[in-house]
Length: 280
Image 1 (cartoon, rainbow, N blue to C red):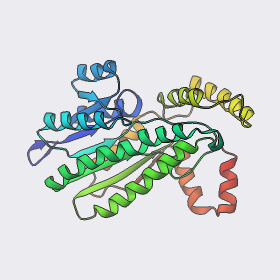
Image 2 (image 1 turned 90 degrees about the horizontal axis):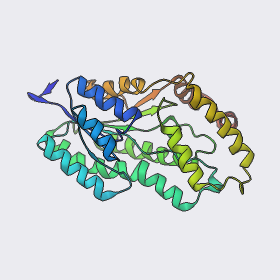
Image 3 (image 1 turned 90 degrees about the vertical axis):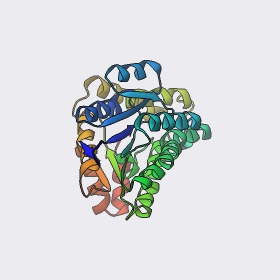
């Protein structure tokens, strides 16, 4: 895979596990020069052992974002054909139970960090005259879900900012796409539960019974992973976003995500929101 007789380069973030880890390795297998990020030395070592240059990046730490970008540009000779912003986490909890600091932390990891890295990449792509920016959003960035207010909000913000950026980059040769997965087999839910227990006072909440019921359902779902697609489903649409002559603005992934998009489009608000309220 070449562009101007050079191997195409891509920065892929959030590669400790799940979607990022799978996509980084799949892209390398297809001939891309992949620069990956992870948060721990163990995961960085695993990526390096597979022949993928990896560096530390924490979206909540602006210095680590700057360091990652500098390392990446040094490794690619200042070239960046594509950026796949992936990673972050999901803060669970009813809106009225969310500490403000938890909401701020959610936006640092899922929104401000993405924006910080993207702003560093765009001048490189402008100088080249081309580039692909792919944001890993979520169906919850389009269709909200109860008890996911912080995550919903961060992904709604990402959707709005990214679509605006796509409009502003029209004609520059830089394309922006959003991937909106539903539930994918990964450690995402396990990480979300860890943040939930750390930040939400379950016993004092008026939503305690709802929380307990959801925790039981989530435990069963995690044990079975029944009906979930794997990260390869995300890779299929990522590949299209990176290589198609006319990449899409939006890529919904999973049956549930696609149904949510259709319901949002077709149902009036007086039916749509009560329907959402029953989905847990």
